[in-house]
Length: 617
Ligand SMILES: CC/C=C\C/C=C\C[C@@H](O)/C=C/C=C/C=C\[C@@H](O)CCCC(=O)O
Ligand SMILES: [Zn+2]
Image (cartoon, rainbow, N blue to C red; front, side, top):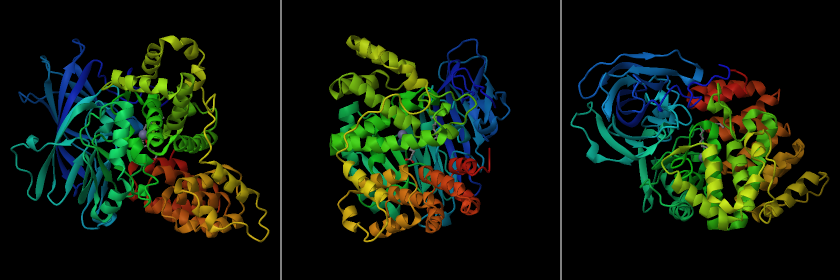
């Protein structure tokens, strides 16, 4: 597509909210598991901001539009679908009626495609319980347009409500508050029932979410339940029992929690991300169920998004670091409050390693290793990496230090969130507010190398020296393994491992992975000594498998193929598939396994792994 922006306001959206904006969407949809489609209508409340404009432009991807009407009069409106542009879908242009009163509602009757990129439809056999089908969505970054005709750009925010009919045995959850008062008078199809929702806080469309399945819940706090299939729900309630503590800590740091409910939904294992910050109900992967709460930092991350990303939102995904860098920063602030500053800095050390690996893999001149992106002609899914997260976090940590430490920076953070709440902003907006907030520190701010931090590729221009008190023991053990000549007697024992926490185990393996390849025999000894092959901790299993692949240790291939088959979290499957592909002997196994698994992978996982395996360009 070349470096072509789809619209002046957002390179990844056809819509023009600056001319005519959708301010509210009401969804009346039936969940048809037989055809794997959502069918019904979207009622769009519009606000014309430019009086000469006669068209409403929406984003659409593989939607079948039946008709468009003025809701109040039934007047049919002309509409046209533009030509489809790759993964961006196409424009849906609606001719407005002559009169466009404030609050006019247009009804778009439509159905989704059975291959909608935002949705995964699972058969009963693909679920844990094997009795009922399952549906869930993942809209970030630009997949909402395959689920709803909308202005699919974070530069514009909407409230939404919904009335969903689904098989009566199933539970429907959405990124909104349950609203029984919203029930309409129509009777649903036989064997189905209605579920009503309302989201009164304005959100970007990427935060519209739905899940439908045979689900149970457990109360885990005064404003929180955890939902999943019944087989997982008690494990999940245990794993995430710090949720209210995280919420209260985040409120102290960031201000009031405006969303009311904070639930968690544990998705099927094909869910492509660790978590997704859908308002009122964070979606999480079951790979967080480590059994020792050691991976609950992802919940802290998603809770932090209730402010950074969901309340104050990147205007386009070119400023994605405003969502993710700030969220990692707040996530680790929560860690610091709950477990101490040394624990916060230990997590930052781990994050820096992930950033370093990303920059090494992409190349230090790759424009997508810049903090602020140019996404003209770029599918956000292809641009996604740890850079906005970890380079963004590093920048904010550096700024905090430069501006006087937490005592000065935390009040700025709270004021920033309050000032821009419910809005969508750019990096420039953020930087201007930073200058305004620190009138006496402009000499410090003018001394910041803004261009290198924001627009230069590669590693950050400054790497903080973090407190290593939690990582020193990890470094010592990793160094001993790296330096061991492998001559007997073997100098290691399980106590080396038993004296460290799960998070420190991850760090030991991460340090070994960051260094030169170990010998196959050393990897084998490491695995036996610490019983790594049977670890239930996904972060440990992931790095253990990669260590074996890097060492060209044959017995690592089978567990690698099993791991990428058992779950579809891209953080794990993409690096492992790439490692298998890079090992010529393992490559055919990777490709055949992918082809077997593709149909049970979520769109974004299947799409990105296909590129990693050079099966798609
Ligand atoms: C820099 C690229 C610009 C925009 C990309 C935006 C979205 C990419 C799309 O693929 C969705 C990403 C969703 C991520 C959700 C959760 C992550 O915060 C965690 C991912 C890592 C993990 O699995 O823990
Ligand atoms: Zn995030």
